[in-house]
Image (tube, rainbow, N blue to C red; front, top):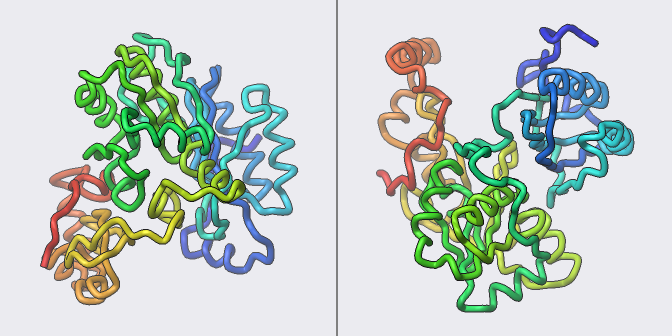
Length: 349
């Protein structure tokens, strides 16, 4: 095996994007996860990197002692080889994949596999409850039937910036910036409704696995979760000719930002209030705030979230770098560490 030092992407973003543009084949974009005991995450990470780099796979993957969480794309000609290699790992055999609604090449431009303490940052001590005691998984049709019951409570287990552009009709959408923050919030807000049926959903299902076991541990007796999350739901709805009860976009954590599920636009530009559901990051790299911005405001504000950020972004690049360096010296968390730090930004001029 190559030395761990070399087990990383060796192209810069511009070079990688040029290479992608020159490809003559399509890529399959998909995700998967599994809670499974991994004895040596570092060795597992390194072996996976060697295998997947050889196949031209790209993506962002987290490996931890508790399992794996992956969002990837693989060249279509290498798909069978990828599945065959993955099946040779006892921990990952017969992995259920969640395939993207669309397969654009730009979903990922490099291969990143990181060692983590948790495959999803939940802030929980798993030794205090049975994480395998999860809720009952529901198909799209079963989920629809539950939604028809006015007594059932549907909860979006994603962050506010995900639910603001798309969610199930009638769902509770907590004002949480992280999954770690949302878990105790949901438990507290619904503490008097422990006998009610709870329907949980998230992007691909992994957050609901932990959320359902956490809520069951805290006395919620009837917990259900959408099997495969919104991604699998969208496939089932299309295949069965059902009307989607999820409206708008499904936020995804890759270069696409979101997949459109229905034509409904549920949100508004954070700057002028016009109907819009396009997420962007502030063009001022020292800010990098994720927010919703329409085309008119993007042009007027040069892709920035505020007048201050616009003024800074118009400075010469060298001067911008000096300012960013000064900010980072004062606050190491200032740049790019938490782009979601400001919640539900109110419209700005």
